[in-house]
Length: 162
Image 1 (cartoon, rainbow, N blue to C red):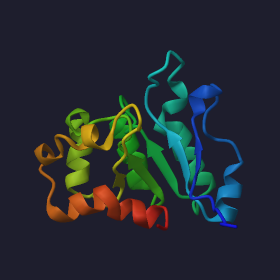
Image 2 (cartoon, rainbow, N blue to C red):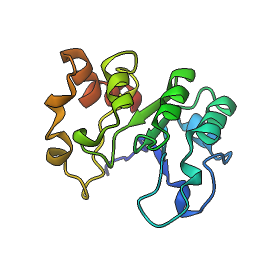
Image 3 (cartoon, rainbow, N blue to C red):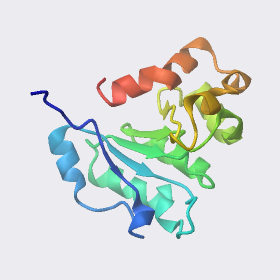
């Protein structure tokens, strides 16, 4: 029989209209797996407040400094806030799921080109956005070879121990 293992735990706070500050993260630390959450506004007609990086993701990272946190959906319209939280905490990362390369906010592209090249992971939100759709305009971002490799695979391999 094949043995399966968890790679990460994903929680979408807007489903429960509760911020992502629950103490269940200790289980992720014990299992050595990342916690993945949604940041930014919600696409569904639900309140977006729980998607604020500050105070919610910031508080979890302070309470659990050994926890790896992957924040999906860029954090828009609070992208600058999300970048600040990723800069502040060594184990906080941003993923680009739910956005195509053409829609990445300028501040995220600048971060990805520079100091954030080891902090941003490619994502699609498949099946709503396919990998081909998400990457169609990647060349327009002006990423160098290292940033491109880290963004497309290197960061995910490291963060998820793949």
